Image (tube, rainbow, N blue to C red; front, side, top):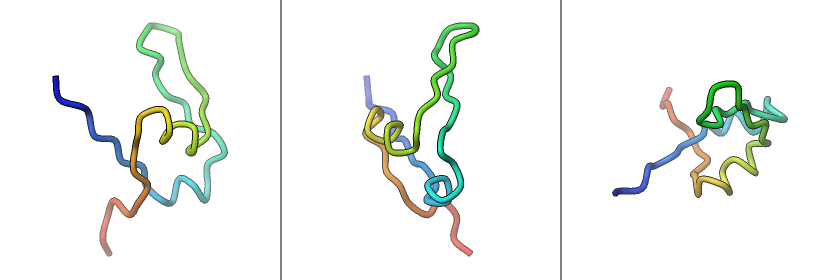
Length: 51
């Protein structure tokens, strides 16, 4: 199975203290800071859209 790539907009870091992420089960939500989310999924922070 190939790893899933995860990208998070750099704007999220400026405006969000926490993000709500699906926990994979009905009724289960995870509240994570952008830094914790990126660390958990080995994600990349950057510009997603070019102007």
